[in-house]
Length: 163
Image 1 (tube, rainbow, N blue to C red):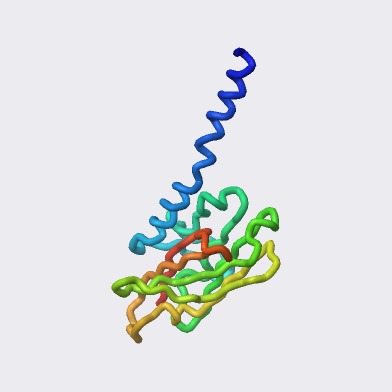
Image 2 (image 1 turned 180 degrees about the vertical axis):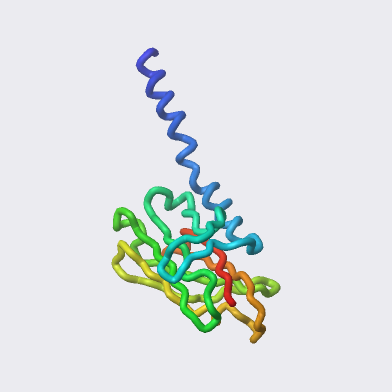
């Protein structure tokens, strides 16, 4: 009986870490919430002001993937923005990654922005933010973008200010 208790204790400690399915679903739902704030970055990738909600790594990929925020952010509507994803161990993101934008329509529409099907471990997703604009409006606004793996599991999301 005494030998069973330490093993049972270790198993109980490990169980909360096993429920990434529910946490992953919650993360996906959070990515569907309205935009608010953004992580400001310079053209050379320096984070100037961080939004704690942007560019977090989904629970399924925790400790396996790293994400560099969108660069630059804000971005000119005729510029290019890049998001870099690193597969820390080189074997988690088989098949590459893709980024899509969420358009403010009813119901929401999604637009493919870029994909990188390389062998990793670094994946660069570069796109023109005009793909996110439905109309020719001149006002600056936030857009939500989401990054997925080849099996459509969300990796990260964040907001980009297009000027």
